[in-house]
Length: 99
Image (cartoon, rainbow, N blue to C red; front, side):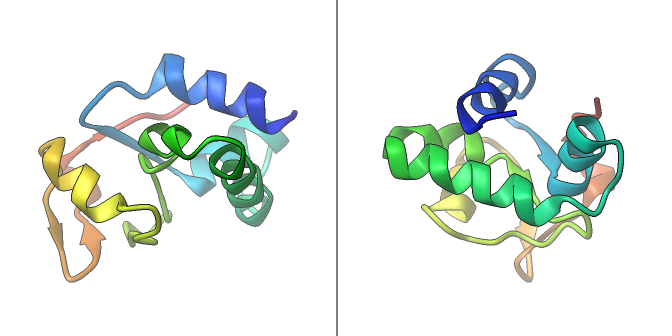
């Protein structure tokens, strides 16, 4: 899968106010949860191509709820109604998209 295909998946599956994790995407794309770094690299390529893509890539967080806080991620997620405390999202309190 190329980054533009991953970006299309995020656009169609992650509406405003929802999130997913690197692990969820890795499991969906590769059949295992160990591909988070590859997912992150594809997301970075999407942002490098066009910074406005970050509005979709920012909805992807670490499996443990930690927020990377790149490209204004915390600000965006809070603006979308997602509560962040100590740089983490309580996954039990959000719309977590699984594939």
